Length: 412
Image (cartoon, rainbow, N blue to C red; front, side, top):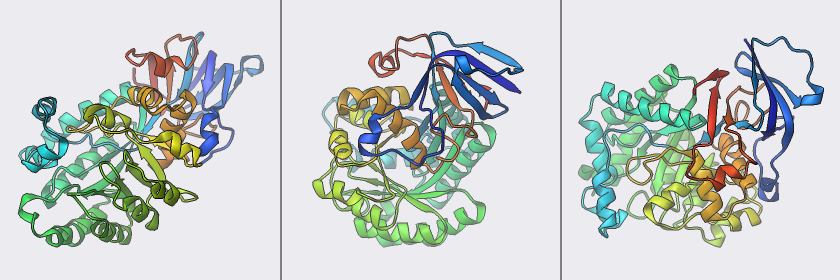
């Protein structure tokens, strides 16, 4: 099957060769081709260029994209979209003045989601989760990382990871799974942290490794959750079982989580709403990708990741949704890109780079996703006719997507 798209107003994120990521000043550079064509063969990008150089092609289907932009699908490297029910009452509680921490301290938050998940069977969780996955695909996401972490029991965590694996088998979107058993301490382990960590390491991790249920390991390194030393213990164990760390850090407090992530060569450190100068310095010249979650800041009314300071320091930055029932009940990467521009003062070029090439790096799929590069997966967005790609973050409340292709097949 050969698909030819012609008269593309502007083809975005064109990279002749695969690159891992862009950092610092490079983030402001978004390579594009105006008046372009794009050739797809089966599920791969086969060719592209300017229209005047279009070779003779026998295509099974030709699409005229006059006035439209084409760009790679979003790579959402941080989500929790496998869960049961919702936490809409907590949303109202926050409106009425309770903080995220206060809600958690009275049995809400992550523990609330854990109760709902453990009371739901696997089929119910799968059916709820697949609707969310289908929604984010229609919104332009072509690669997504999904975490466990709402089980907080051996049965619950393994149930979540099996659902994630089933989603990856049944949908064309690329899915990476992360074991986040260290999301919170269950009530029965509130005074026995080591007992719960031992459960994660000795009982659950061997099962995950045996059934190949995850690629990454995560922990919520934060005041009131997992300390730095507890997080390091969990990262060490995950590495021994072949899982690379991706760590929640600096959402509310800077307690050394960034430095711990760098020490254990975490693929990414995520949240980063609170960043001290020493946190930024620690990330310089490392292989760890900082990931910002601006729609979480929007929903919780907490600070935004200081993107300008971090980019000025030469760091790369990725953007992700944090799609979850408590702090970001949205998987809309278009809104994330817009919010990064509006609230974090990222330029459209920086935000698109952060949501594509850097997002791909943050979930370990740079070789196949994140750019328009020959040989990469044919996962891309076709916009409606728009004056420029600046319209994507500018018209933040408008759906500007006309079509989404994942693995060469049209989704919408």
